[in-house]
Amino acid sequence: MGGEEVSSFLNYLVNKENVSASTQNQALSAIIFLYKQILDIDVGEIPEFQYARKPKRLPVVLTQDEVKEVFKYLNEPHKTMVGLMYGAGLRLNECLKLRMLDIDLGRREIMIRRGKGNKDRRTLLPEFTVPGLELVFGKVEKYHQIDQKDGITHVDMPDALAKKYPNAGKQLKWQFVFASGNTSKDPKTGNIGRHHMHTKSVSRAISNAVRKANIMKHVTAHVFRHSFATHLLENGYDIRTVQELMGHANVNTTMIYTHVLNKGGHGVKSPLDNL
Image (cartoon, one colour):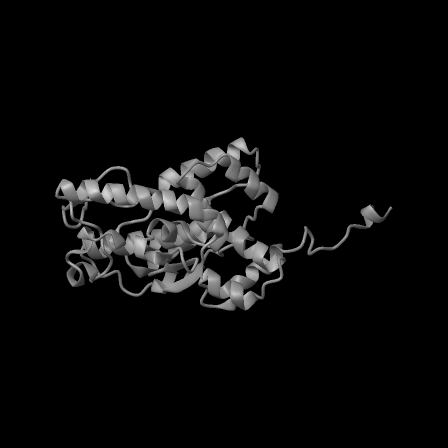
């Protein structure tokens, strides 16, 4: 079987199985991998096939009252982490990958390095998060002292920075802000070091808090970033400012939040309410 059969199979997935665009892409990638890496066969040119349509979905956004309710049921350090996602528009991975040198308490500023699209950006540091960050800084400093005494001097570094800064693990500034309570082995190098907390830990804390707050919306960590952008626009900040803080390459990406600014139905008042 070659390209013709692959094309027919991809059409079948869309027309008969009604799969999503991501599932169809995954099937195509899997087939190409099978032919190239396992069977060592050239699949040839794949004729045009019908692409599954990716649905346009509006982001889930919490009200400010709902955000307050969630915070009531969050403990540190998760409370501070969610505070950075809602208060500064950070993605979950951006929050987890923060290092000590990325946070400037004096200037109330956060430096996001190698965000989505491998771009750097600066964003605000919410006053709300300062007490929690000070607690976290103290904990990271203690971890670092213990690790140094135990001879643990490894810290995961992106790209080629490990070669550029071979002694980074000995310096406090390169340690993760939200460091794990346990050391672990780096799968790439085999070195023992202290990585950042796992995403599941944060997601679990958010799910528990949302359940206790009795919120019916499907709330993930990313919802707090959506809420950050929407509430800034509601408070009168211009869309270019929000685009810069969110790190969007195109303002059209930011424009999606204008669709959820007003109440249901684009802010139109129902005639029923005029009776």
